[in-house]
Image 1 (cartoon, each protein chain N blue to C red):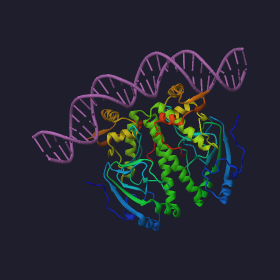
Image 2: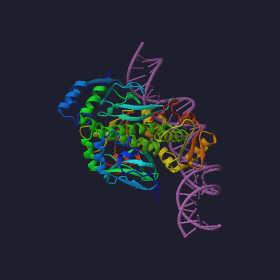
Image 3: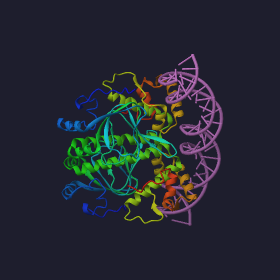
Image 4: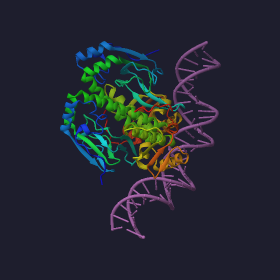
Length: 246
Length: 246
DNA sequence: ATGAAACCTTGACTGAGATCAAGTGGAACC
DNA sequence: GGTTCCACTTGATCTCAGTCAAGGTTTCAT
């Protein structure tokens, strides 16, 4: 049963209104968008688009998590993007999807047919500008991830993933209280492995190790508590003074 | 001695005119750009910008190669971008540089002071649109590279790098004749290692192995001949039917 | 010529993470 | 209540790439 939250239909109630591609739009522009938008929901595990398929829509993640995944002929797979609420899917001006897009959790997307969206983009600098901003941010994130993939140890990779999830979670949650950080892992061990360029066994071992040493606490398999964020960041190998920005 | 080619001063003679951020500009727009542009040259090995520094210009690579590099406190470094002629450096709307930018070879850049460029971008959709396109392309390239870093073997990584250089070289060169592909490696073994997430010893060994097996031919350390591009692509683990596009 | 500094190659050994394999725990379904 | 399935854990072993070390080339300055 699909249980993704989805209880609004107009943009003014939209939970991602101020972070998505429509963030800078004024009332008139929003109205135009309202005209061409529609919602789609996906269950966890479903494929949103297959690599190589015709892309006839673009859109924003409203709730849930999607992933971009590349696969080699022999089955090796690498996740190349993790799309959280407000992230944009699709590329204006391109016909076919370059990656598989998968619903990692139950997922709600706000979709626009591609053609009208492209037209609207031409006439609405606010949208084009916001999309440029978001794309530049994603490029930064991809490059940060290249350092993780290319140079970090398994333990540092796990710690990096946990701190990214913790950080993005905190930036979406209404308020971040001081003290321990608590969240649910939205990914299976296998999905984490695919993101980190590891095997699921190594992921499991490293999580067990971090737990044994008290860097993280686990309740069940997925519910994580971070007693000391700085300690986790140290394990990730990041500059420990790294800000809480973004 | 600096020997980068640099023998034009106005945009109409510019070798990257039709591929750079100014590609879609009409005559009037070019004239405006002419007003705020200036050239800078760097010798191989020089740093263009340090990570964290104030960025008061943006610009395009005219000739030569620059690299974007991230470094961890303990000295591990990962190259996160390779900038070839026509590629854009800098991020409108951001104050400080997120990575080190290094001149890998002698380098000529066409620079614009950031403030005027940002203003111009606001009033010139052609520039903003082209920049969005280029950023999306770079994002694709970064994600393709994430697969290389996360899932490929050392041999596949080397083959991937060689085929990328071969491909981009071919797309810039005036004509691509059929038959063997020939080019000079613009990177030291160490720079290749930093790009590929390997050590320089492993790079050297894999190149020797590819040479011994006839996948590539070497004259000196840097001059490479690819007798059979398809064979190299196979070694890279890419879909062998992968087009020659871009 | 000689020395020094880059840049590159090759060899021997080591170790982190992959692979192979078995087993646990919990939820769903009959 | 038992079976099945899935996500996960843990152990034993293997292997690819890293590390340490030595030596080779080329270039450039003295």
